Length: 186
Image 1 (cartoon, rainbow, N blue to C red):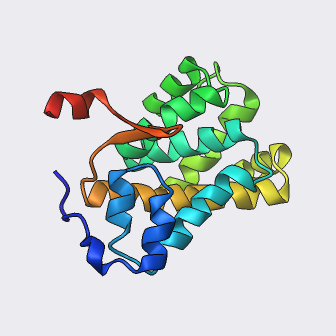
Image 2 (image 1 turned 30 degrees about the vertical axis):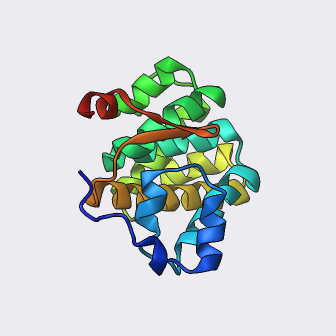
């Protein structure tokens, strides 16, 4: 059960309410709406990560799944499993990320480097030079910054979800889908 109640709709400014009305219903959006001054830019940043990155969608999803795993955020993982599949991340790669076996030889060199880099950024404030150099070999400078921004966004998103016990759903396409865990709770 969520630690905060849904925000009072009457306390939400009209411009924010209008912006949110175009989004699918989602418990995380409701939770974020407690901060009426930041919910719109926070969601706009999420949109930018799906529309304005040089980083390929498959790579973005590898980063997001890794952040979800290393921050213990099932909410983000549940949302992004189907998205990652649609972006070309196969089941075996998702299982490797889930098991935190970042050096698994079944991963391509690109995937292994990107996942290791992401995991290290989540775990530590500094990335060892050797790993950073490996990331520079597979990513442009723009992509490195984009990876760091995706990591930061989903770390923050995940902490809102975990600290506030936001109900786990997946939003894929236009419909929120209950996870197996949520369906059993009904």
